[in-house]
Length: 409
Image (tube, rainbow, N blue to C red; front, side, top):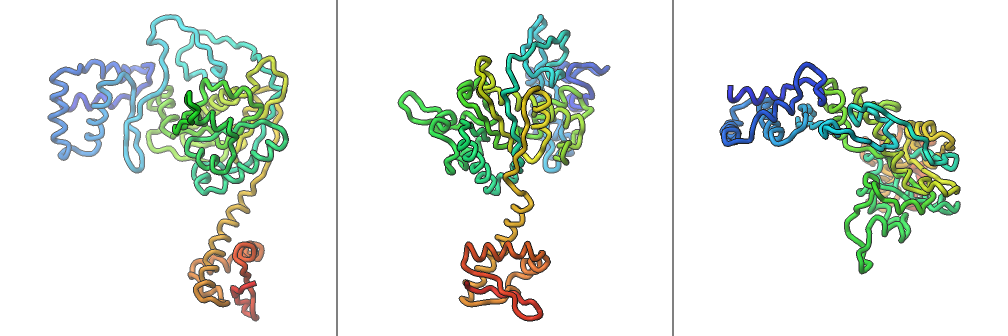
């Protein structure tokens, strides 16, 4: 009984607001006091973990976390490691008093604030006819940005925007900052915002300002352009925790995977939370530039680098009077073809350098050459173009059997 009862605490099947017949998990956990007996129980059970099955070990560690917290949680079953997922939502009812919530984007995500008795809509003071939303169709997922060339594409785009006379501020993640800093994408003034100097003028080594930390950064109101170098996509657990707070154990507790255009998560409940939070955070962030200046009548430009149309289209509909344009500076299919052609070209050059004279491509690694032979003439010509421009070589087709030779120009 001493062993089983605490483990049953983690079998809760309800919502954070206790709307089901079962009492909330926090009530049960609060009934267990952190006294000497409880601590002794945890020490004793901890010694016998090796004899417990995996599910009981997980519940035991979860109980140790829960006993000191006043939160609801569920076990999140993932492919690599199961973990405890705490609900994340501010429950204003705990204050037990009337409260006024001022949230300009509250109507986009009304459930986030919990039980609200009355909701008032106030007309926005902003003139969105000044706002120009630009959808730059560039793939900017975290895996795509790791390849490096995406940063160059966005850098070139930002430079061209500045050439048009728009004072655009590039907004990026902390991990992307180094790439854009090396490319010279940021002006000296913008570097000071990311790495705020101290009283002596020495810039901080810490990047405290970034895509996910713009709250209160009103110094951006001097810029009439804002470039989102990627969407505000947070960790999967962030959206699942909020979905759990709102929907209880109705959400799926296995690992969520990104899906297709129009739906990012397998679970529609989590997907709905993701979309609403993404829109809310994007709207709050874009209001940091000069569109927030009610007495300013000059234009404002917001650029979103993403291959997905959902966010720019939704923003255009919500911010009535705004203008939406699309720009495609990047051919994704051509990009991948060039990447593959570069791999073959580099291998061909190594083969030529090894022998120091013209060699047949059939001497390349078998899988590489077989892949190349299956390509269309147009795709093969990309490899030839790279060999000519980068390495001073070319591909020569010889004889009826169409044998390819690598030769020097």
